[in-house]
Length: 152
Image (cartoon, rainbow, N blue to C red; front, top):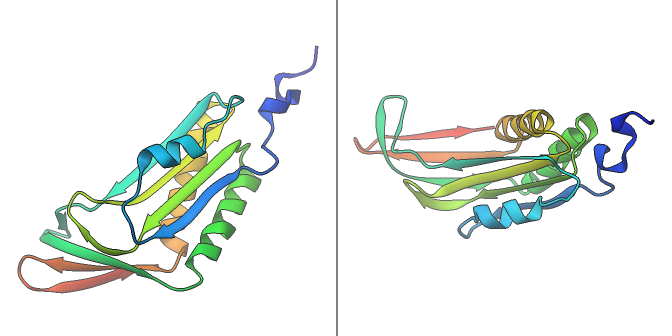
């Protein structure tokens, strides 16, 4: 009997990067979740980043995201790195730019793998690397009238 990891479903998919985008319009958790649907996946991990009402002890009223023209290419580089490190069957990531309000979705990423542990690890790697390496900047506006820029 062959080891379980010899089954085709245990291996990474041929083209697992299903959706990568930077958008000025509202994001959809359902769209990202559908993009990573895969019959050979036993685990799907999804992360949703939302605009919170505070940061560093200050009340946030609103924020805006902007990005460098290379941002989508950097997202692809990171996605390819995650696919190379984990048995990813399907991967999707979308990030919002423009003006957002508290509660709006800022980023949605998802990864499907044969097993839940791999899916959690790959999704964590994907969002952490996107946050640290993709040239997307956040301009926060606080209730006290101050502003702050945060970015990669």
